[in-house]
Length: 337
Image 1 (tube, helix red, strand yellow):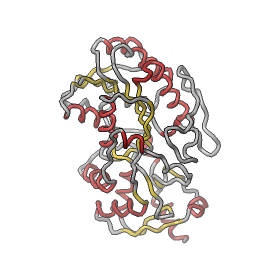
Image 2 (cartoon, helix red, strand yellow):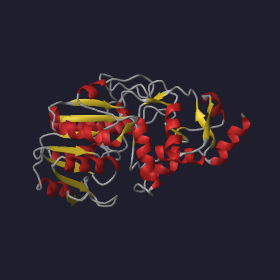
Image 3 (cartoon, helix red, strand yellow):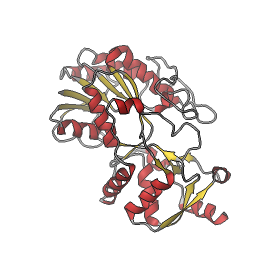
Image 4 (cartoon, one colour):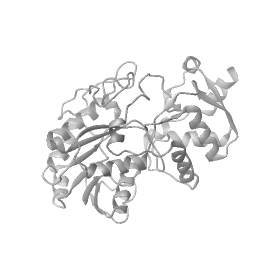
């Protein structure tokens, strides 16, 4: 099996490259060479995926049985379209890492793969779309939906779209789980979003990587929601953070209305907390039937702490600074209860 990973140096792309090598596959990676190091054992090609000449040079390294694209999150659909058409005759399949944000109803409504998608042209530029007053839909979601359409235009039934919600695990660059782990290690009274029994569906980066590799060899097509089919309660999640770090902390469960009164930002200041009804109601049964296997979230938490405690540091990313409530703000809210 011969694959091309667009990206391939950090978090999901790195996990995919490593997983493919472990299977004995031949792996080419394509990236700008600016974020992270190339995985030993791959054929590393450096270039800019938005530059046609670089893509034409890359195409000469093929053909490949499949392309796995992990690096389109910040790109306009027209840039995805350029890469897809440039490689259309050099690859048998295209596995595209997308997002649940492509759905019209996210995060307000429960979702399946039959749920309608946002409408965005395949050749749209970065200005297309908008973000709603309540934060949904997002311009990001429109852009990613356009990216899916771009791949579909070039690869048709040989295109697969993986739509994760939240990906956690060793190497995480956003900072959601590392923040909760560090907070658990500090202990004391921990501000936590009620209800404690709310179930969340984060998926391990290694499990997404294995599913992407499985899809590279499959004959399936279309979209797959990639979320944890079992999930874990928020209280169970914090318990696992405390257990992994050895922190002596006690979550204080605070109602959403109180958190809102104090101006706590959902999704960022308390990572993974969001009150919309559909945010953790994304059905992944189709993916499970197609081979998705998710390890217990407790294992993800423990392995991420082991990585982080050993001076694990992801590549620099601007989203890292968005996550986590300031200690002073948290203490003020707790003191007011």
